[in-house]
Amino acid sequence: MHSTKYERSLIIVKPDAIQRRLLGEIIHRFERKGLDIVGMKMMELGDVLLDEHYAHHKDKAFFPKLKKYMQSAPVVLMAIAGVDAVATVRLIVGPTKSREASAGTIRGDFAMSVQTNIVHASDTRESAEKEIKRFFDESELCERPRHDLPYIYSPDELE
Image 1 (tube, rainbow, N blue to C red):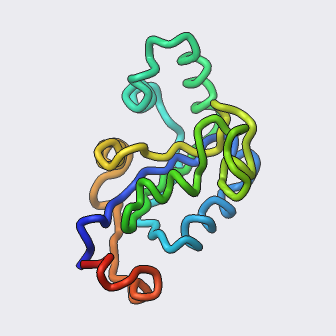
Image 2: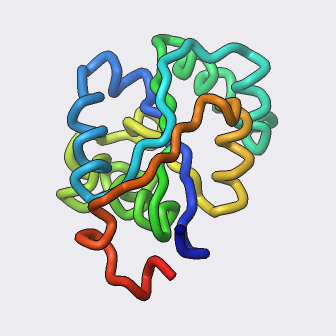
Image 3: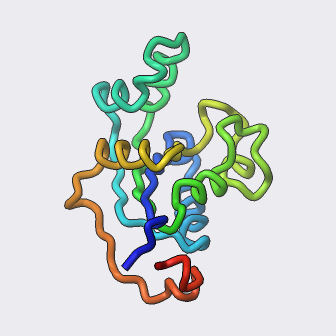
């Protein structure tokens, strides 16, 4: 049984991270923290998915470059779960403006750019739910019992 704070977040490991061979390091950081990867796949993003995912940027001057960048190489999509997963993932990832990200965060350690900033991470629980549904069928998500949860969370965090 999971807490009401148990949630999922979407991560897109972007083309720059794939081309720079940082996937293993990125996965390692989420797993080391105690988060659970419940879905993962590699794919090339098409126009329809990108237009939907970045609809809030569609009218901005940088959108065509963003789209071209996101289609420049495959991406890896991950659904990550845990207590307060959205906020926890965003702490691990660091701020969008990579040059402002603290050392120890994914962006702080590996990125300098706003656009080529290694990963996308959901910003709210609501957007995470929408984003995961956009990229994953429910049958592709594999939540399973974890026997190490008492070593990651206190008992009251799992109620």
